[in-house]
Amino acid sequence: MKAGIVDLRRRTREILRALERNESVTILYRGKEKGVIQPSRPGRTQARLVREHPAFGMWRDRGEMRDVRQVVRDLRRGRAHDV
Image (cartoon, rainbow, N blue to C red; front, side, top):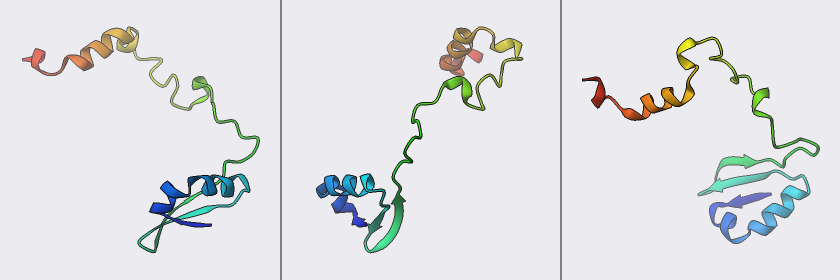
């Protein structure tokens, strides 16, 4: 299925039905293809556990990162206090 930018607003229900039928929807802007919306794969879980993400625990060995609240406070404080 092909849909223009205006179709995204006015024919959203039809686009969602096409995705339910496992059809890809090509998005057009002024007649040129800008992107493709793919249906989600059945059986694929959307929610992942945070601890399964590769970046989880990457700073585990850094001593200065032990107190997370202090690190966040320092980041939010800004540079004015460094002078």
